[in-house]
Image 1 (cartoon, rainbow, N blue to C red):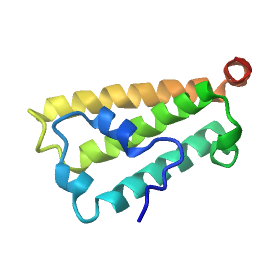
Image 2 (cartoon, rainbow, N blue to C red):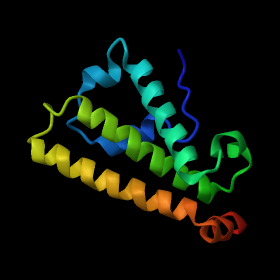
Image 3 (cartoon, helix red, strand yellow):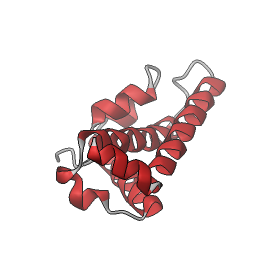
Image 4 (cartoon, rainbow, N blue to C red):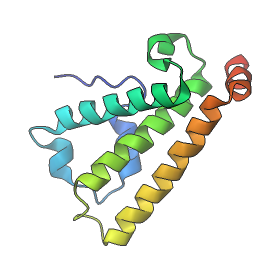
Length: 125
């Protein structure tokens, strides 16, 4: 099975989940299935929340818009992996802090992508 994520590849997600993640969920026998499943859900959620099907026009998007989509998808997918098993983090608080930061970033980017003036500005850049 190959990586099927459009917005954020595994490298972007791995960067977000930090060094204490559950390696079994990431690299185990079902790791690629988990990554594709979570990334697909993130992309569908981003498309739905912004009321724009970015997936279908991804190849035509400006690099800045692609980076916003990558950041949002990586944040959402990372939260899925962190919540899957928090045992590897130094404390539950560490994991929860990471989730809160990722959640805030995700929400901020969604607000930007919903703002048509911002998207038009970035796409024109």
